[in-house]
Image 1 (cartoon, rainbow, N blue to C red):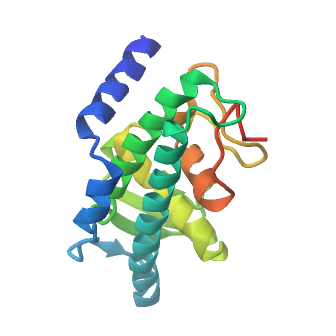
Image 2 (cartoon, rainbow, N blue to C red):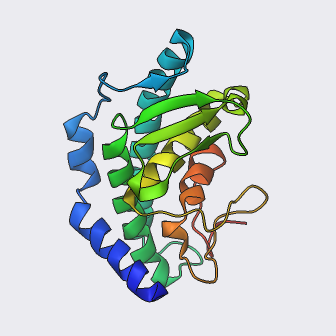
Image 3 (cartoon, rainbow, N blue to C red):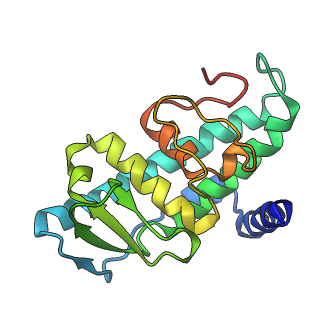
Amino acid sequence: MRSNVVALIALYVAISFTSAKQLMADQVTPTDNRKFSNCSHLQQESLRSLELRTIQMGQDLIEKVSTAAQDHNRPGRLPENDRKLHRSAGLLTCAIKHIGTLDYICISGKRYDAETNWAFAKVIRINETFWKRDDQSRAAAILHEHSHKCGTTDATYFRNNAPHDTEFTPWPFIADTYEYWGHIQFCIPGETCN
């Protein structure tokens, strides 16, 4: 059952994959006809600005991931990571395409700084603790949430360690991989991640 889910996700990513160069040429920009429930004007403007920062972050990560995937001479290379890196580029491309398509609700008292209902998401809930993060961390969280639209899960969080596979989920399908890359550093699990 689990392998069928992973296969379906991989198929979805393969279908929705566009090259990083084409994505950058398309100049993705968020739309303004979305809802910002319970968000102040300042929070709305900050979220719009963060989306632009997130798009740039995603494009930078796609470039790093694509370069790493093509470097077959990288130190400590694990051949299975080449395929995972290509999947990551596809997932990042997909996530960027969804930026600007979701509504926001500003809330308080939730467990997470930002959260959404994975692939069926129409709304990202932004908790008051989200605003205590720095801009880089907030943009990485926005990337994490948008990656759920492309099939990533919250199988684990990489708060105290670097991205890695879990028992049932490869690292490209874990949303926190992209938050870690955006906020901490880009690294290749099993190779350059410590």
